[in-house]
Length: 242
Image (cartoon, rainbow, N blue to C red; front, side, top):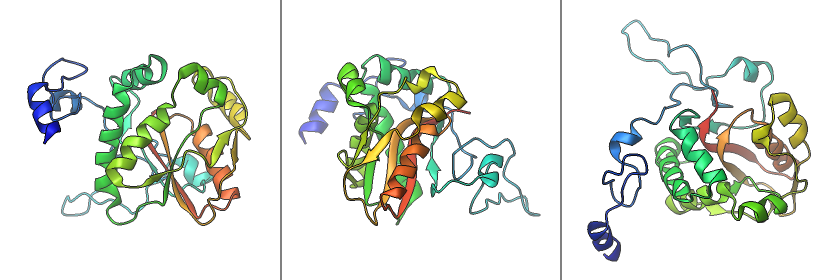
């Protein structure tokens, strides 16, 4: 009741246009429609696919159970699936940059809630046992003051009622920030970056992060989780770099 009264007296305003937004979300319906959807993509890595869905003779859209990009066909990873509902393009890239590098935590709330909306629709019955946000090295965490992946995971955990495990994995090396590196350098930089220190034996896990670029970070963490006995690993991010 208090929240309803508060929202009525002090309505949220959109972070982009300053118009009154819906409920507690700082994003109006119009601006949400401007977010570029990643609607047809690889099941394993969420890379946008160039072709449109095939159609049958009655012109009905036909979707296969698993769509794979060329890279995942050649070298499939052990990731069950990657969910990335939006493309890392304006204004999504702006939202993520302001969250990561400008301390604007309001974007973690927007990102977490919208990602949760997608997941609720997608998951239906099957949900993981744990959410593991991609950990920051302790030095980076001290510099930034927060882990944006954990901030997003907190919202997803609340909406989907899935436990967050923020203690079972640590980042053991303070690498150069991935955002400053090219694709090959990212792969080298992130190898052996994570150590599993908790018991995740037999657990179905979803990794949470803000953006999937080359996949180097998420796949390195995936490898560490499987080596520690995870039953399955999925990747949930807000955006995918085309």
